[in-house]
Amino acid sequence: MNAVVRAVENLAGAFQNPVLGTGVVLSVLLMVLFLSAYEFVVYRLVSHRAFYNRSFHICVSVLPFFISTIILCLQSNIVITLGTIGALAILRFRTAVKDPVDMLYLLWSVHIGITCGCQLYEIAVLTSVMVTVVLLCMEHIVIGRRPFVLVLHCVPEKENAILEGIRSHTRKYRIKSRNYTERGMDLVIELSVKRPEELAESVREAGAEKFSVIEYDSEDIL
Image 1 (cartoon, one colour):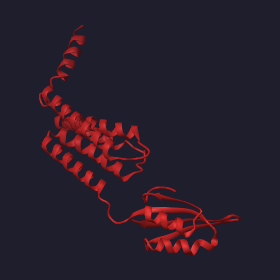
Image 2 (cartoon, rainbow, N blue to C red):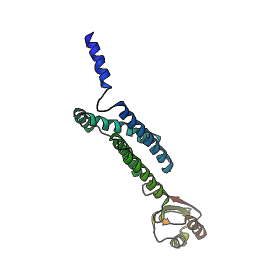
Image 3 (cartoon, helix red, strand yellow):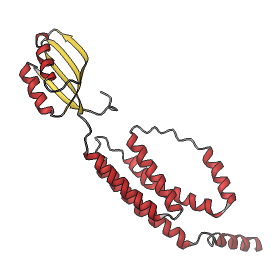
Image 4 (spheres, one colour):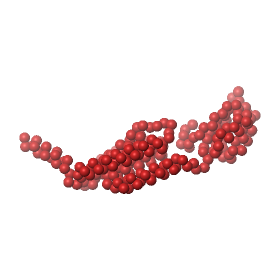
């Protein structure tokens, strides 16, 4: 009976950590909740992707909660610190991050967790706001000409005229492939232009029977 009473007392005492009070833990979690929700909204509004990854979206929003509480635990006891370092050393994460921007949001989540766990709320808020401003600016600023892929079908006799029409809009182009068939030829051309609609009009006037102008990023797989 005495053993049961002592176990209950030890369990109750575990919730009364003199280093980390309940108010401190709640304030950290509430701040993490606010900043995680903020990052959740920014990721959804700024990331205009054709293939939206809902699982990754949830991951970057929940991750700061674990990191902030781990930081709190590391501050409370040196034994816990050593045990946590040993536990994290054996973890292996093999999920590949396909988009470099996704890595940015992961680092943002880690930053929120660490700064809120250390109760550096001002740094967490100011950094989040500044990152949002930079992301919004970079989202709407186009540096240089946009990359496109021109896929067209024509007769071989019209190839020179089509290439001449392309040269009137850009000098930066490269023929990726030529595919000859009984009905004509298919061309795949990589180029950079500012006004794709004018390029399309020139290609049509040069004699292309069918064509498509596709905008793409360098990381896309055609």
